[in-house]
Length: 104
Image 1: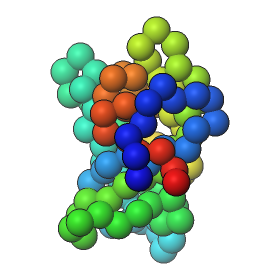
Image 2: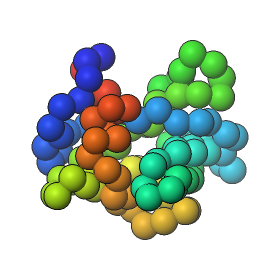
Image 3: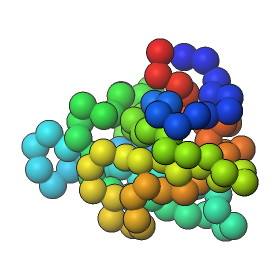
């Protein structure tokens, strides 16, 4: 996968995350650390169809869709239940461009 540059609405991206067990079969807990001011943690339960395995069992990539980008911020929508804040989640554009990978 190549590096993300200038995400547009509708772009599917894969964001690195920490993986946990889900409450129900067919889902996994996902934890993402985002530098918003200090450190913000996004946590929720995502369908396993929207998760790719990483290099270790506790790391992976979670699928998100870009809704819009304005003034250095990007709203990304995750499928599933985000418990730590509202969904879509607003993240810094520079961070997303650095860590996310576009869908191939």
